[in-house]
Length: 371
Image 1 (tube, rainbow, N blue to C red):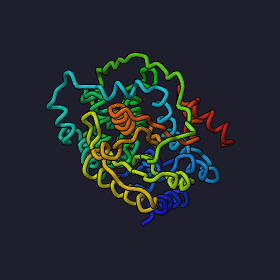
Image 2 (image 1 turned 45 degrees about the vertical axis):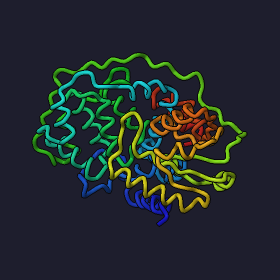
Image 3 (image 1 turned 180 degrees about the vertical axis):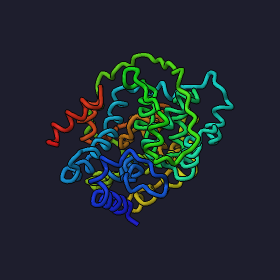
């Protein structure tokens, strides 16, 4: 099995058969038996088996309405935005529940709220490790504005169970629903919207949004500057994480090290965990990549101390703001190790424009790429 070939086959099939109708049908969630109106490539994008910029380049000749292109752009934008506003991530991982009804939280996580659609989505999330994007928005809105639960707890639940879980997209999308990204304009779900776009699949939709919650936060300061790629390195080893596995044009890079470690961060730091199904999926990806890099070795996060050993310098393919970056920074700090991060050129270019609204970012990206 070649995971890159498989992922590209899924993408090409969608482009050939369903891209034309995507702008009309993308908001419909027909259920688990029919996903033909969406691409089903998110689990590959979040691990960069499919590379965002390469997808957009391929879409130039096909996506006349640009709706699918925009969806890929959102992922680039979210990553860049979190790089510019790192304090958002710091506040998120530090969050601890102070007071809420634990019975409601338990019912929500177990899918026993009595809200038919919500409970079915919990079941789907745990069974299939996927939810349609529109359903994720509805789910988050019900979680925050009907069940009155902290958005951070919902974000952690998604990250635990989604095969396409991505620190930036997941965290910032939940904040978007809560109204923290759009100048206090939350996304409020409606029964009519759910009924229309699920084609009346659900019966008991009890949504109470009469008293909207006020969500407050401090103004997030923007970073002084984004990373700059270092050229020289004294490291004999390279570490890469499961959320950036793209190998294109990197054989020379890999061959310059005595060992390349592919790190699977299954038990996330700060008390966050991934479900067994998600870990199994990631394990399959990294084992596939391991076969394609001759001098590589698959390792788990609890092996990091052994990997680092007596090294004083290490090279790391930059994993982006999130749990993986927290993990490697923590170990490097504790062991007084100097890290040289290896960035992707496209990321360093476009993250510079992801410091305000999406549509301003989109306009700049389109201009730079003649889209």
